[in-house]
Image: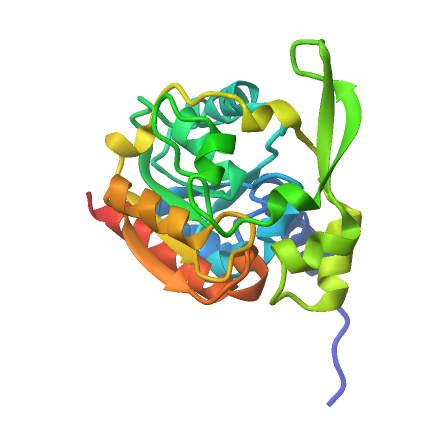
Length: 279
């Protein structure tokens, strides 16, 4: 069958559709397909906060699954410059949003969302993934040492760098030869090598900063405990989840369930989003 050439009008209409589609992809970079974006408007926006030694792309395996479910997602760039500064940055992003939000934090990002979300009425649910969940007055370094099992301290190396207040300080990295063992034991070797090579440093003051508020005391929370975590001890994760009254699931994962168990992480976030939408 011979195809007829498109008319000039058809070409113009098709071109307009391409431009419109491109615009949608730019404005809603995390919205998935046009159909998914349309279905997502009745769902809360999901905001993700990464932890130390990482960036927002660490959430990519989870984001892909959430987008396929029609959720709108935004991964915030966590500065990793100390708890107060990081929480202020994330809080500014949250305060700029007018829609309901489900806020998730991985690892150190859990401490950041606990501080950032306090008193914000649009944050309807908190989701913690292998995370710190401090109470007001607690220090992350002391909290990490309160339960046995973490091998992170021995794997860190410090590089001289100004502290957030400008005084002499240090940036912390995980040694590449220890990265997979401590952080990513069930992640493919190639992926773990890439993550180790591209890690972002955490200012050392983050482990001595004191939390000032605890958003989980007033906002419902969900918690994924990684039972094979060598970064944040699983028993600490369980203690925090019980204390916060979180709806909790446990998975046999390293510190990076974002990569090794992304379906479980996305499922827990979807559960929180469904509850938030019905509240």
